[in-house]
Length: 224
Ligand SMILES: [Zn+2]
Ligand SMILES: [Zn+2]
Image (cartoon, rainbow, N blue to C red; front, side, top):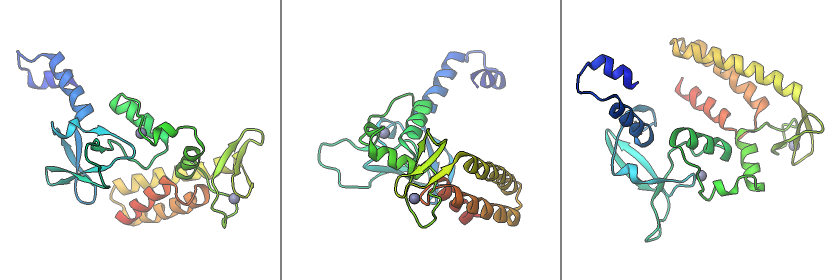
């Protein structure tokens, strides 16, 4: 990207290293400016706000009114405690959040949620947010991988879902999601709506009722 800037501008004094450093600063410190419906509008660099550290269990949130950035408390913050915001979407399993933070911000988070990695609470949270649903549709249990049976077992009722059945629905869901996304970005809203409804149906068969994927599909459906 630095090379590209240098080629386009063709300023003799421009130092490639400096451009690259500025790009790196921007990547780690910039914030996405969103409107009131959280639709991204652009990127901004806010020197004061960049000092605020991250937590996956933040006590504050960054909001925008036009270009003006404001930090709002979302819980009681005791005097003397650190103001923390989340740099990433907080609705993700610990593994997903840690991966996102490492890839974009180059650190390992040790917030109260992240230190629970691998503990029972954390395993349950991950299985609900990103895992499969029980075969018995009246059961709200979450599924855990069972290597002996080559499938997933419900922690609540013990029913097993085989890998083959899961992969079949997952394949159909992936194909339909891709088609729906193409239809939406090409402006075929009626077709996209129909396809996203099919995606929702497949995801309801596949994932836990509180799954993030299902929530995202419903968010898209609302938008369409
Ligand atoms: Zn964390
Ligand atoms: Zn069950």
